[in-house]
Every structure is written in structure tokens, then in C-alpha cells.
Amino acid sequence: MNNTHYEKLDKLTAWIKEQPITLPSQMPKKVHTEEIDSEWLENLKTSNLYWFKGSKEPYNYPPGFGPTERKLVPRMLELRERILSFAGKQVCMPFVEDEVRLHQLETRGQIWYGDNSVFKQGARSQCHLNSAMICLENKMKGKGNIHMVSGYALSDTGMWRQHSWCVEVQESQNIIIETTELRTLYFGYALDDKELMEFILPYTK
Image (cartoon, rainbow, N blue to C red; front, side, top):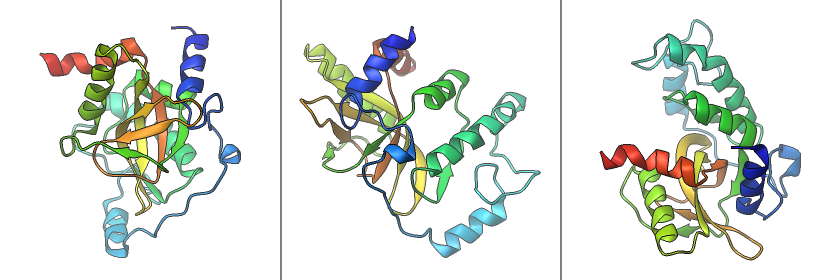
């Protein structure tokens, strides 16, 4: 898919249409969160997991981390730093992004604020599938104004976590549709129709 296709999609789905926020300097307002719970923070320090900001090499890795995953760790850490440049204290990354998704986050990742989000209750801990189904249902109705977005979301605890949500395109100010719990800030990229179907396919088998 050419860059023009993605540029149009990124602008269409931006928090403020046509104005994707890709740099901290473009943020119309700063976001502040609470400090991470001290006991939790101490446990994270002790774990020395690769994604924890403060860990030192040699890192510990989650189960299942093989050569392929470890090869992508430097890029994951660069992504972590970029996300933290917007707000937050830590980025939880227990799963390494696959090559394609990581590239999309690196090249197309943008910021959305959680202000005025619409909450639509979905299955617990199923944000990806919840969001995909909302988007698919919208397309089946012939509307096509809701897009699935995937990336990371910031809680008021200061922790970013892997997450998916939807963006409803409106006249000027687009709106986030959240299916699990409301978040403070979001960083990710909008999936096009092909990516959406590729995402849903494994759930149909």
C-alpha cells in the first residue's frame, strides 16, 4: 500500500482531523499522571525485564522470547522512548510487536486524547477483538466512519499498555470509542480495511 493511502487515513482519523499529533511539540496540552505505586515499581525493578525503563543488561525476557523477538528489542526500546516522550512513566511490553505492526507504529504512530471518549462495554480483556467487531459492524451497515486503531494506551497510573480502540470520524473532532476502561492518552495507528480483515481472520478459524 502506498504512503499516500496511509497519509489520508492518518489525517482522517486524527484526534483533530487533518492534524495528526506525531511529536510532543504538537500536543495542544500536556498530560500528567500519578506516580506508579511504589511496591509495584520495586517489583518491576527487581524483575529487570527488558521493557522496564531502569533495567540494565543483561535483561530478563518473558517466556517464549527467542532469537526473532530479541532481534527486535532495540527497536522496541526506541518505540518505548518515543511513547514516553508524550507522557507517562513506563510502557509495559510483555509481547514484542511483529515486524509489520512495529513498522506501522514507528512510521504512523500518532496521539489521541481520551477526552470525550465514548464507552461501549465489551468483553473483559478483549480490547482488540471488541474494537475489531465494532469497526466491522459499522462497515456492514454501510457507514464506514469507524476505524480500528491499535497501539498503546496510557492509564492514570502512569503505565502504557498494548491496546486497541476505535475512532469515530466526525465533522471536526473525532471521538474515541473505548471498550474496556477509559484511558488518558492513546498512541497508535488506524488499520485500513485489508489490515482489519487480516486481524479478524484468526478469530474465524
